[in-house]
Image (cartoon, rainbow, N blue to C red; front, side, top):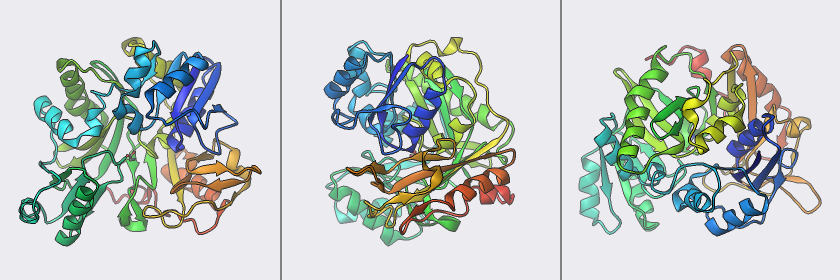
Length: 425
Ligand code: GLY
C-alpha cells in the first residue's frame, strides 16, 4: 500500500511509525510533515494547505495513494475526505457532514439527544448577543463554568473556571473571533478519552487513555491541547470500555447512519466517568493528540491494514485488535510561552531525537543548514513503555532529561495521580 498521511503533529508521527511497521505498507508520504519525519516518509512540505481539497487530491494522485489518512480536524471539517473520495481514493477520516460531530458542538448535542447519550446541559450564545443576554446565560450555569469556542479550536478553545468574570471574558473573546460560544454544565469525575474505529454501525474501541490538559503540574495553568497522556487506565471499571461503546459510541454511530451521514474513521469520545458511568464532554472526529502517541505504542495489530479496513468499509471482517500487555505514557515537551505565545526557532539537541520508539516530533522544523529547531507550542512527545505505569513513567522521564531545548517545560506528574491511587470512581 502507498499511503499518504495529512498532518504535521506528534499524532501524525505516531501514525507514520505504526504504518511503517506494517509489512503491507510499501511507501509512506506525509504533508506538510515536520522536522522529524524524513526517516519514515517522503515529506511533502509545500503541497498546499491541508484543507485545500484540490491540492490534497493532486498530491494523492501524484503518488498514486492506495490510502489517505487524515490526521487533524481542520481538513476533515472542510470536507477534504469528501474531495478525496470523489476522486476515487480510499480515505481514513469522516465526511464533512459526519465531522460536524467535532466541528459543531451544537450538532453533537443534537445527535446525542437523539441517540439518548448522557452529556452536559448546554446553551449556545451567538456573537451579537448583548452584554445583558450574555450575563443572563452565564448566570444559568456555574459555580464552575465551562465556556467553549463553538468554532473549531482543536481542544484549545475551552475555558473551565470558577470565576464568573473569567467566564465572561472568554465569551467576549470567542465572540470577537466571530464564533458562537457553547456554555456547558461542569461534569465532575475523571476524564477518559476513548478512541473508536467506526465504519457505519461497526464500532471497535482502542485502549482507553487519559490526557492532562492543563499546562502545569497539579492541573494548574491554562488549558492546552494536552500535555501528556497514559494508557490503559488502571482505575477504570473492568466493563468501562464496553459501557462507553454500548452507551455512547454505538448509539451515536447508529444515529449518524439513520441521518444518512454514516461515520467512517476515528470517533474520539471525551468523557467524564461519573458515579453512574460515562458522560460525554465532547466528540472529536480524529485521533486525539497526545493520547494517540501512547495508545499506538501498545497496538500490535498492523496499523495500515486496520485503517484500510475502515476506509474500505470492511472493519466488521477485521480480526480483533491485539495489544501489548503493558502501559504506555507520553510527556509533551512544550516551548516557553505555550499555550498563549510559544517561542519558536530554538535549537533542539539530544541523542535520541530520531529514535521513534522514544521521541515523536510535533512542533519541529529544519533550518536551511539542517539544524533541528522548535516551530510550535508542543515540540516533542516523549514516550515511555513498561510493565507498570511507574515503569512507563520512569522510562519517559529518563529520556526527557537528556533532551535540550532552551526554556522548554514539561509536566512532571503525567499519570502520577493514577500511580498513587488517587483516582477513584
Ligand atoms: N487530547 C486532546 C485533543 O486531541 O483534542
